Length: 89
Image (cartoon, rainbow, N blue to C red):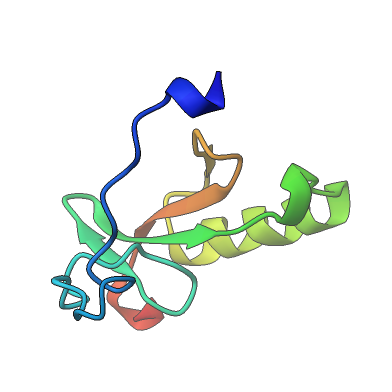
């Protein structure tokens, strides 16, 4: 079955080129916040998709102090903190 699959085009980096992305569309993280209509958002990666109660409570405390007070789960099994104020960035 794999032999019947079409070859994928080489990426610009594997072909010796440079990446056409300039970093302006980089995903948000805990160190790089993203501005949204409801304030900034931070995406926190959850290794293996396992979040202990203690860590969830710590994230919830951060969300309550700096954001909208909620933990938002992403489709990739991470957590977003939304509505963060200017003091966070």
